Image (spheres, helix red, strand yellow):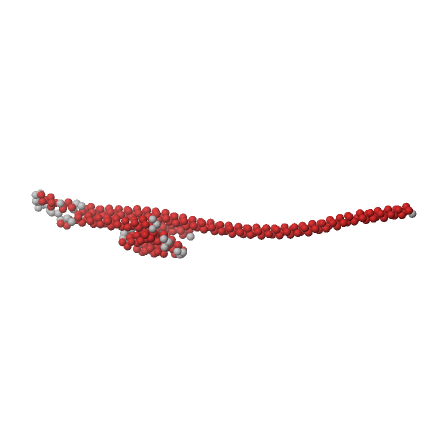
Length: 299
């Protein structure tokens, strides 16, 4: 009985020990599941935070990209403006070089025409020189024996020929020199950049010498000086006066080119195009027509 009771107690103790031993294991199982849940919740939270950060970074990058495009666009526009300004400067320099070449050519032409006039005046005066010799015959005859009837006296009409020819030739030469001085003085004002004085000088020249070979060139330089002053309407009017007064002048193509350029500067693109096309049609081989083709191709 005692042994059986002892055995029962031993079994009960073993069962109790097994029961207490099982409680920590179950508690550990419950702790692991809770930790997993917390870990999962933390991972989800981290995922949400990561997504929010990615969204914000994407928005910032988008703003930066759009701002970069704006800056790039502004830079492109600035480059375009610089190119346009450089083209304008190149065109101005090309125009000035062309005008300098024209001035040199005009000077050579004017000099040649003046030399021809002087040569012509000299040729007219030369035949009158021998006529002065017979005028001395009466003085020599006074000391010599009386001439025979076969010797005829010099014609009375021939006697004043020599004295009259000299003043006439000198007057022509003086007029030519005065024209040249007036033209050169106005041209010198233009070269110095005194365009107002050049306009006054050339205008006075045209009024004083309207039939001079230099008058068309002087009228052209009036319009060109006004163009340099940016008085484009006055330049157009002056060049049209040249076309009306001197339609056969070699300066007509240049005057038409100046008119077309002035119209373009005034914003009359259609009128400028018509003028340049008319220039090309009427004077296709001129240098002005070549420049007109170039300008029409650039527009």
